[in-house]
Length: 171
Image (tube, rainbow, N blue to C red):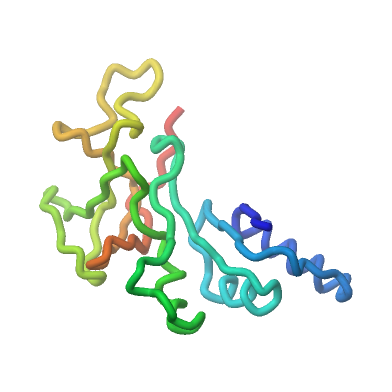
């Protein structure tokens, strides 16, 4: 059985389980968690208390809505939970149809080295082009949409959000 929720739902779930210690969620084997960065401690609790794997994801309405999902690659086969923990705290790799990159403040693309951080941009066939009733394009001349997030991307394409460059709500 799988579950999908934001981190605050899992905080509430753990509080509920603390109140009713005999309760078991033994059939749960996978938890997709997104909406905000999943703390390392939550990933560990999901594993230790629920016996389930955490799959982190990130997206936004403008991406309709999924952007990246943190699944493993063949190079991760056979690794232990502890060995995969550094990977699990990342938001993940781009899903089909979504291109990702990070750029500096001048728009220059930055390396995928896991250390350089820059403005996260996305593009693809289902990434927003314009907002409703807005004549101005939501993307640049190459169709890249600036998410407002600051991130790193490692050599395998895993995105890790590190900050917000702006908190803007489009209406």
